[in-house]
Image 1: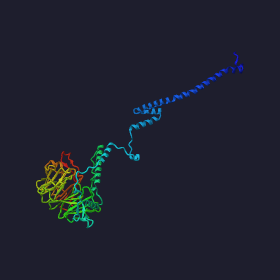
Image 2: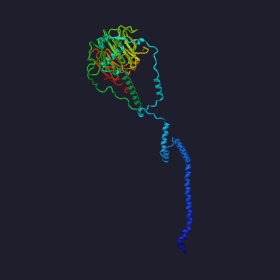
Image 3: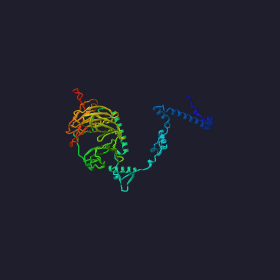
Image 4: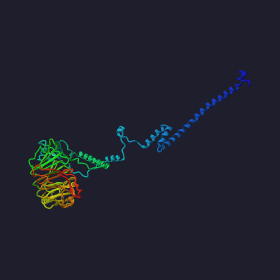
Amino acid sequence: MRRPAAAALEPGAVNAGKAPRMKAAKKVSKATKAAKMTKPKRAAKRLPVTAKQAAAAEAARRDRHLKALGSASGAERELEELVFGDSLKVEEDELLRRLAGPRRVTAAQGGGVQEESSDSEVENEAKGDLLPKKPAWVDEDDEVEENVDMTHKYRKDLMKSDAETTLTKKNLKKRLEEHFQQAMGGVPAWADLEHRKKSRRTSSDSDSDEDDDLLRRTGNFITTSEALPRGILKMSTCLPANQERFANGKLVTVQFHPSAQVVMTAGHDRSVSLFQVDGVRNPKIQSIYLENFPIYKARFSVDGEQVIATGTHHSLFFVYDMIAGSIIPIPKVRGVEEKFLRNFELSPDGSFMLLIGTSGYLHLLSMKTKELIGTMKVNGRCTASAFTPDSSKIYSYSKEGEVFIWDVRSRKCLHRFEDEGSLEGKCIAISKNNQYVACGSSSGVVNLYTTDACLKENHPKPVKAIMSLVTSATCVTFNPTTEILAVASRDTDEAVKLAETLFILLKEDRGENEPVTEVL
């Protein structure tokens, strides 16, 4: 066995062997500390160069990253955010904001910051800055205000005092407007131009919406009538429309205004009266008295601004301008050689006036100038005439029972046909949809024809003969929806009948093409 000699050694011998080693270790540690003290100084000198290089590398990296943002997918962006942090997302938003350009700010959002104007707005502002054009010349007579005599019999009611004998035209116009508004209780809708323009725009918008809705859906578009209910029509008697001023003579005309709740009455008492119809009081608006002029017929113009009246034994007629409040006599129409002018018709478009003369002559006048355009003639005597809804044709009914169809532009006869069983023609009417023609005769029979048959055949068969009257039919008219035909007679009291015109059916079971309509 090996003897442990180290255990027998003395401590002094061991310490003596290690002493040189300890001194050498201390020297090495001092040298290491000195080296460590010198390294930070070297690093401090190199630090500015390293930071610049790192900043340049970081900027280059960010530029490359921002350029690749447009083509990077969603997964790549998420990975970049995880690796590089949220700072890149902020930089991406900043880049996108710069690419989008300056944001348009409204006045409400920006607290007074004005919205950026486009090129068209700049052009409009430039146009608005242009000076108004000066007139080429000025008539001094136009600037002179002409005074109107207020003592005239037609203007006495407008005087506020006896000293007010004259008024300027401008003040007279204001006085007439005040008088009219006081009688109407305000400005009616048909006289308010702004209201009419808005209603036209609203109606055009609603029509376009209906057209769009029609094109978007499919199905059965044929439905029952909404204007005319099925079964018995219920009617109730209201107060007389002219209860505030009953006529002293026979009434020959009663007509509603085209666009307002106003009714006009005229008769042999030489007066034309206007009433506002409300069903409760029916106040009178005004009355016009035509001296020594018993009225034969009176009608509103299509625009509702004028009233045309003819007399029983006169060759002139009157035009009452409701806007200006003036009565204009038309004493003589050049080219019209008639002793009496009684019956007339107005075209639906408001362009023409047809005077029915004697010996079968028909005189077509311009509604604007009241001048003669042309003359037509039927065989025998013309008793009634009617314009088509488009004002392109005229149907003239002769006393012998023949109907002549005229072209308005050329004033030539296009066709003529005989009314079946007519002894003497009295009245004629055309439906608003230009589908039916109704002819009333002295026997009280009203024949209902289709317009296609009237234009093609010389002896058309009526689709229905209405025999409800026992006296001569003096008036026939259709309602706006062509669902009701009213027939009446002046020869007896309460001789008014309403006929319901339904759809025309074809007898397909018998193989016939004869049209048949049911009339109740």
